[in-house]
Every structure is written in structure tokens, then in C-alpha cells.
Image (cartoon, rainbow, N blue to C red; front, side, top):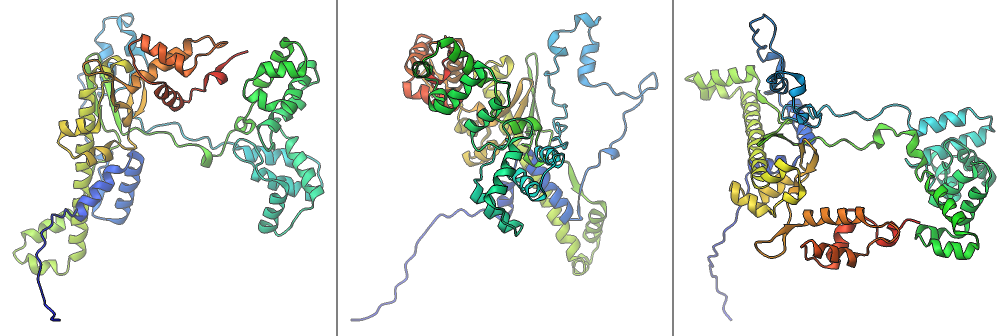
Length: 481
């Protein structure tokens, strides 16, 4: 047996992204708030980078009368009319948003008294045994934002033993839980929805309707939750009018009593800051990127590099200025990446507006045309992966609301030449459900037949999928008494 040494040639095509390309991909994926955070971090780390200060922008020139020119484009357009009564209603509509609207000035979370502050204050106002008070305060801190106590007694005892070093006995725990459940609003401290509703009923003055409602929750809660009213009537053996009155009383109760007390800022969902602002003025559509920062090289760094480049002995001069050069290059590259991101997003949004122009002019969801990522790719010349990153987790503000960019994408359904979008089908399903007789709500099959009469041929399974996506309950749960 002999050993041989051979050499094989293998040709492969491998695409590797440069560091700059990888950074661009990451920046492209960021939403407007995330970009702002990334820019602030870069500004803090790189002294050669600075944000353009608006105060350095020259002030507006004085007008003929000597006053500063401060009127907005909207005010100028209103001034074109001879009399205020001649101004069209749509120009007076506060929703007639324009690109210069400051969408970053959103309402801030309420930093007032939270649910926990409110309940702790109520506990402090009660005359209690010190041990019971301490356990009640701990239980208040264990409530969720809706006011529910999801931990049982043994879990609460273990939690307190671990966090405070003291383990309360069962009697103290029971007394503390009752204290919490006596707080306002009624329903606080319940372990589930059924108990929450019962606590609210028990806090009401006694009456026949209240007693019937309590019996329904105690004995027939599954039937109540499934809206099987006929079963409740037959099992309680009371007139249907009394059952309906009791059910109506239950429906007036608050399933989330803690939400009525407000919430802390940490529990408040952040408002959506749009990445694009779409302005619509008659037949004109404009696109703006309000959150795109203006950056530049800091003057001292720019001057130092310019002097080094002008110096004939620049190579020798650079040896002692590696820090200046590296920071300058990093700032220049970051500015280029932010500019490239802005140009890419603007091109993508402009292409979306071009393809969905009729929708933006009419606000009618039926005017949405079938559009996929590959259509935007073909129009802009960008790769599909770039379009996907540019539209993911991005929002556009229009005069009639804020929408995720993926809202404008939809598959085409139906035969060629008579296509419709899934958004159009969803709108039709919602209209059909809103117009139905709530005493006899339509099943998915009947909704399918109603859609077929309107020219939309879809399956019952498709109807069920779209109904679930719009969070519309099944027919049984939409039935009114």
C-alpha cells in the first residue's frame, strides 16, 4: 500500500460583508427611537462627532413690516382665502397632519400616583396590627397592574421568608389578604376574574338582582362565560327577565379594577414614534423622515485633519495623531451610514406611496392594491433583504392614523384581473359583523356566503383566520341576550 499526496482545486463563490456593511444593516433595522439611542451613544463615545445645533441656523429674515417671519405653511395656505368661512373643513381638521408636524412631542407617561402608591396609602390609613400591616403592604406589592393577586398563601409565605426573613403564619396571611380585598376599588386582591366580580357584587347593597348575579357567578360561571343563557335560565328556574337583569349587572362590573387607579411609568407602554410622516394635500402626497438626525464632524477634529493633509510631512505628522485620525474616520463613516440609512428608507417609503397612491388619496382600504416586498425591490433596485429590514418595525404617520409599514403589504387574492387584498377582505368581514343581528350572529360559513355575494371568494377557514386576527369572537360569544 502506497501513500500519495494530491492537491485538489475547489472554486467557490462566497459573499462576505464588510464591517461597514454590517453596521449599515444593523442601523437599517433600528426604529426611530432606537436610532436616536444609537446616535446618542455614538456622540458620547466619539468626540469627533457632533449633532447640528438648531440654534446655529440663521434666524428668519425680517419681513417688510419689520416682524420676524414665523407663519407655518398651513397658516399661509389658510391666508389664501378671503374669508375664514371660505376655508375648507379639511384644512381645519386637526388630523390634517403635515410633514412638519412634531411627532416626537408625544404625551408622556403619567408619573402621578400609581396603583401601588394608592393602595399603600389606604393600608396606612387603617388601624391594624403591625404584623398584619407589614404583610398587607407586602401583598400590595405582589399585585399585578390590574389588581389581581396571582400568588397563593404558601407562595406568599415563601416569598416573604426569602425577601424579608420572616414567615407569617396562615392566620396573619388570611387577615392581611382580607385587608387588601377591603381596599378601594372593590375587586382588588382577587385571585381570578370570577372572584374579582364577586367581590364587587358583595360590596353593593343587597337586592334581588345582585343576589341572582352572585348565584350565577358562584354556580354557573362556565355557562355565563360561554353565554349559554338558556342553560342558566333552565337550571336556576327563574324568569328569563331576572336572569337577563343579573347578567346585565355583571357586565357593568370592572374586570380590571387596578387599572382604574392608574399605573406607574414603568408599566406604561411607550408611545409609537413614527419613522415616516405622510402628508396628503388634495392630490399631492409628501414623505418626510422627522427623526433623522443631522450630524457633522466636530470643527477642531476637522481642522486638525485638514492641517495634516496640507502638511508636506503629513506622514510624519500622523504618527503622533493616530487618535485624531481614528476618531475622525469613525465619525465620517457613521455620518455616511446614517445618511445611507435615510436615503434607503426614503426610497422605500416613496416606492410604497407610489404603488399605493390611491389608498393615500382616498383613505379607503378597498383601494389597497396587492403589493409584496419583491414589488418594492423591483421599483427601488434594492435587495429583498434590504426591503425587509427597512420595513420591519417601522411606522408611518398619516392624517388618519399611524400604521406599521407591513400594513401596506398584502397578497393578491382572487382571479387575475379581479384581484383583491386580504386587508379588503378583513374590512368587509368587519362591516358584515357590525351589521349583523346580535341576537342571531353569523357563523363563519354565513360570513363566507355574505362575502361571496359581494364578489369575494374565500374559504371558511380563511374567514376564521381573518376574524381571529382582528380579535372578533366566534358567533356564540357575539350573541346578545
